Every structure is written in C-alpha cells, then in structure tokens.
Image (tube, rainbow, N blue to C red; front, side, top):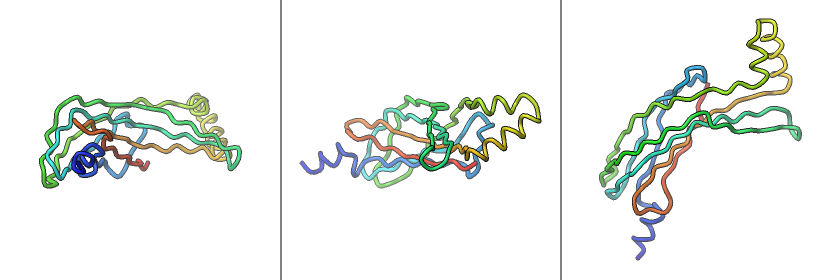
Length: 154
C-alpha cells in the first residue's frame, strides 16, 4: 500500500534535471541543453514539455510591476525508458524561441540617439529581465509529475 502511494506521488520515481550552458543570450533565438532523467525504479516517460519564460520587471519598491511572458515551448512526445538503479538517461533538446521587445526597445531600435535615451530610461526605471527554463515530464501511473526550473544567466 505504501509503495503504491509513493509511486503515485513520485517520491521514489523519476527525477528530472535541466542542464544548460553557463551563458545564455536572448538574441540567439534558441537555447539548448540536456534533460537528465534518473529513477530508483524502472519507469516510462511518455512526454516532456519545456518552456522558456521571461520575467520582466520595472519600477522600484511599491511601484514595481512584474510581467511574465512565455517566449517558446517544446513538447517531446516520445517514450523514454528510465532504468532502475539511478542510471542517468540524457535527452538533448534545442528550444527555439522568439524574443518580445518592449515599447522602449522598439523606440531604441529606431536610431542610435534613441538607443542612448532608452538605455538611460531603463536604468532610471530599473528595468530587468530574468529568463528561466521549466521542464515537466509526464510519467505513466504517477499523479505528480517531476519538474525542474533553471534560471538562465545572460
């Protein structure tokens, strides 16, 4: 009985880890890496979904505004057998994405003088972007699917 509950909760099931390069460039329009799957018991992964999200914040303290934008997603609908004993299974991925420009970025792209003004305005309003990858694996017979998040450094 306890074994069935553990399996359904995914306690001794598949563990998912995102491995990406140290440097990330939002101007590259794709991000690649490896998804590493491990399990104490033999399991079958029926699919994996990977999403790239931009967290765009501006303002200071009480006036801070934060928005999140999904820049791209990748769904891998293939069966992957994860063996017992913690032996890792590496699944490579390449996630294409499309960068969203803010109105300030569009203004900056019009000419070099506007670029300097936009840069100063961003510094004044404390505009920052943080990018993260999220991955979730679908496992047969499990209620809580394994997932992982990875912050990407520019």
